[in-house]
Length: 118
Image 1: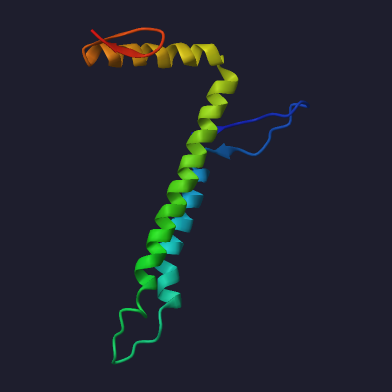
Image 2: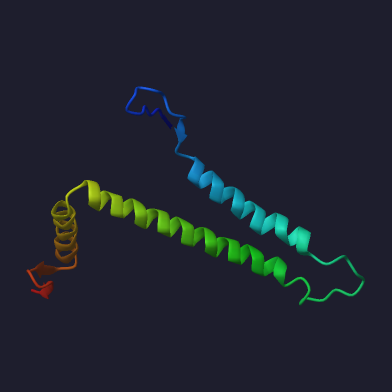
């Protein structure tokens, strides 16, 4: 999916690709989890020590955590854009509707304070 933009003089701006964000973090994830352990690994020796190869387990975990934090911040930013472009009371109405629906499916009736047992 591509988007063509024009500035105020009618000149075409470069195309924006929406997959760029995910491909950037995907590539950094691949580098952090696979390339760095190979570069940082000690030279093979006859005596194998688990402490020397501990970073082979730690770096992929760190890469996964960093990727999850980046994705979470991206989705929070997208949600804040939704609140900005759509009216905030409209979103509150949607959340209230689903809250009431959840209360009814649990066998409770809803009120202005929250879920109350029947």
